Length: 495
Ligand code: NAD
Image 1 (cartoon, protein in one colour):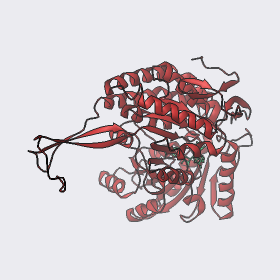
Image 2 (cartoon, rainbow, N blue to C red; image 1 turned 120 degrees about the horizontal axis):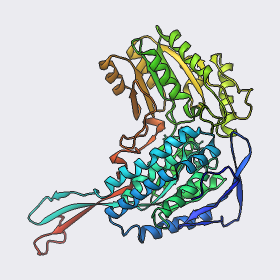
Image 3 (cartoon, rainbow, N blue to C red; image 1 turned 180 degrees about the vertical axis):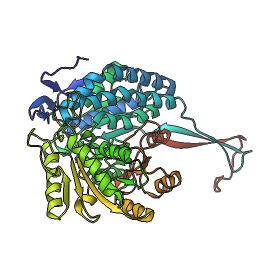
């Protein structure tokens, strides 16, 4: 793999272990959100390329990869982990150029990504079934086999494409499945390079195929393809609903990791400096473009002024700028449509009478796609409190007692994540149990590890990624019953 480079690059599709042009021969340009300039040419794959990729994944599933034991798959996955670490800088730079994420964040993320593959490698050789005592154990012996579901269609969003692909790829490889991934049109490059690196590390051709494409018909074709056995999607709730409909029409399994509007609940006894730090991390890291963004601050009325003042002071001091520079704390919004969407939410908040405590506008000093870190004081029924902005915007409001705090936190159709800030251990666990969300941090925020399940309640999704149970999403359970006596039975009765 080539070293990090600032040169203009070209990325083709990656199918059956080879880089290939789209059947149509078409390409599109990927824009660097910091410079505003095209930095790469991307193959514009369509439904016909999806079809070729699905056939390649099927052949690998029925061929070399499907024939490997769990021990052999684990060995490949450990090599993959090493290869990701060795190429972390190159992959990080691709993500920075495509999405404007901070180089220092992406280097850390990619250096840690191999852990997902070693973690799931540890499960690949332990996919054991059960022996089951049959109703009549003298006559029948029962056992179960856990078998790979087959070809997985993975569809990923533009924020952290490789992390979010890995949430799917590591468990599906452990299970023995193969994959076609359709990365976002806004950040497609790193996924192509990643597939090449994994293939060089020993992943057989056809196990991981990448079809990039500008038009949404590419993702639609993958979600609806009859050669796919399971669809794993990360993205917005609106798209997730369409993807799920397409998958269910084929009676396919589907997991959905969707949007959120996650609460940070701060009680009066909390360490307010730590809470302010967690609020900043929750909503301004990655320019707020994370599914788990802690975008609602629900603070006790007695400490609201003090906490909001701390958050505003920190927010105003955030250094925005070139994402590749070590001192930068917040990069641009990742693409123009998202930038326009965030500004639309801010205009709407102002029109609805919300108070802008800081930010609320583009950063005119930098131009481009930079929006200042924003804190909005708003009532709980306002749009800015209710809808996912997916940008650097915090909506803050107050509660008076614990019951109200929980009710406000749960007053959302989403349920991806949340945090409770308090020194009272009893209250911390009570509130963690009461808030309807897939992940709750206590006195912390934005900590994700391979061995803790991640996913959402409500509109935030279906199923879980990460943790041991995630492998089950890529397995079928098969029952086998063996007749023990060698005798024949009445054909017209069961058992
Ligand atoms: P998006 O829904 O617009 O797109 C996601 C992917 O779906 C892209 O690859 C896109 O090309 C594809 N797509 C679009 N229309 C499609 C269709 N009709 N059929 C099939 N595929 C289609 O989301 P986005 O803007 O790329 O990402 C931001 C969203 O992702 C936010 O809502 C965020 O909360 C969510 N997200 C969730 C998680 C999580 O783990 N829960 C993680 C990251 C992002």
